[in-house]
Image (cartoon, rainbow, N blue to C red; front, side, top):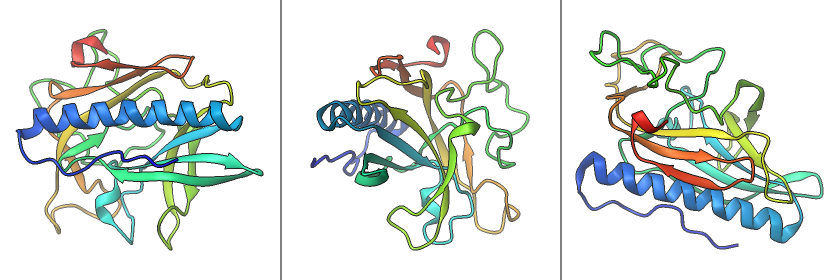
Length: 205
């Protein structure tokens, strides 16, 4: 399968970048579902969640990959970066690097029901160490689609605008990225049938 996820973004600000990333994420999920059903083998989408990536610090929460299972091993189909300044909001992980969510903001990173604004599709139980387009192993989180195109990991994947923190402004192990505004988010809601539906605001998650 030949699949182009995201090209360059010529302008339009964070809103345009979020919209571009949202559409591309939905397309990637759809491509994974089609690939799984066409091949009769599971497929999965992965997000790099390693803040200490030695090879590419810019991969954290921006680098995504699609793999399909062949003869019991996962083979890479395609990979890409989200647009500059756009990041995947992590799931409800056991540990999230300090500094990712800015403190003392007027609007908390919560949903309308008061629960944490997190990507519920991405779960701690699906964090693995992988070597993808890189000589060094990194931490990734994934969600899988069965050969029938269904998933056991329904929920939301949230995208947010953010910025890279200046070198030297954060300690080792802290997040190299700071997310900017919980009101500036988009994403997708993934059904148990593996179908992504666009979600365009925090209030809609």
